Length: 342
Image (tube, rainbow, N blue to C red; front, side, top):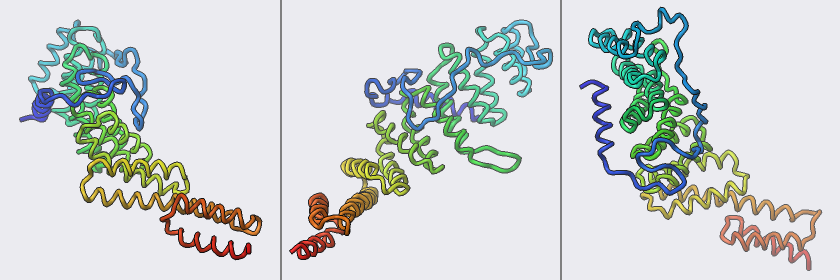
């Protein structure tokens, strides 16, 4: 079975699977909708689509169509395919779309071009670009849901195989992440959208872009709250939040936000290992808050301040953090200051 046939069969299986849980109103379209209405935090902004991206090439007598009309040109492209002249077929399909973009054969040629790049060349980035063009410019003239799923499958192939320069393979995370973002933006209500979002967050995380990863994990929890991806995202989001916090552990509001999230996450039915990990994170963030509060109290315990102001500061600290590791030191210092006052 060829790679194209495998992807098409997988697309059929997904389209026949039960619909995903309803997305909350006003956040993104439900299943079957073609485009997202909202921006997605943590995504790169896509450039606006031009009115028509493909135009006839320079030196059209070389690169242009070989026939005088779209129907004949498409028949010529199919003849090239049957003769296994795949490079010529690609050129013929591309020339048709450029020369006769409004013809009935243009979306067929565009899809055939993408199929050929995927099947004959294993050019995953090129195939992704052409399937995306098909969705963007011929959305009503193709099987949108099937092509969108094919786009998702090709994005996964891009991630799996990476990019090769000569004989050297590299991951090319940015291009792969933007590919998955393009999938979600075009099929936000699809059953595979939460997993695509999870991949986007993972790629942000692998590039140490923890703030952006948190935004994507948050979107998964908000938009796809009942999906397996949402449950998976909770401990991962916690790790990313802690990575951000360790860069800025002096930030009181950031500490408090992290504590609030961790307390909420610990009530979400995590497995034992995740629960232990998050409880450790919660203790760490709580210590940061207590350390900052204790340093603030000590600020009043100086020669330039009155003893009473220092006592009041320590008492306020104990009122808020009675179980802190600094509590005994604060109580002892209060007693010393009271004795000095007498």
